[in-house]
Length: 142
Image 1 (cartoon, rainbow, N blue to C red):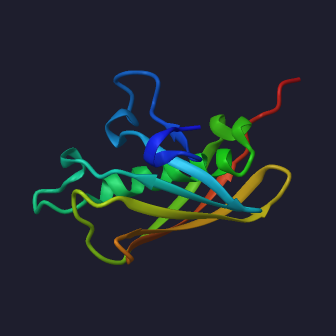
Image 2 (image 1 turned 45 degrees about the vertical axis):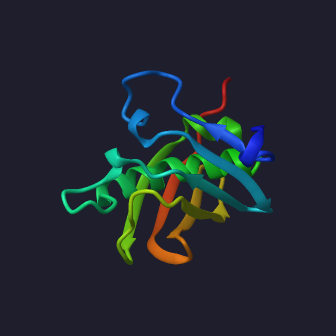
Image 3 (image 1 turned 180 degrees about the vertical axis):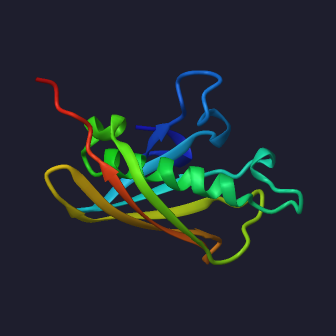
């Protein structure tokens, strides 16, 4: 759990330097209710496209990250090694550099092997993206 302005939140940054997730930066997440979580991220200049707005590829990568942070916040940290089967994005508006991204993650359904999930991303109360994903659960050790 974090201190200061993020008290009551968990923090996550990729612990291995040079990996794909390193440029996303440190996210903060918490469970909100059964099957629901919030994931927050500070936006950085490296998240911008050529027009100075949030890059769509960055938003898709962050959505993928947010699903796993959301599962951890929902009490499923063992699923950090699960894999994404599919991920769809709907870009609903432009996002800027500076304001936090607030992501609401929801677990729609769980089966023996899969999680069906969705999320929305907003900045300063404006919807910038939505997503759905299917996550294949991590294998259990035998």
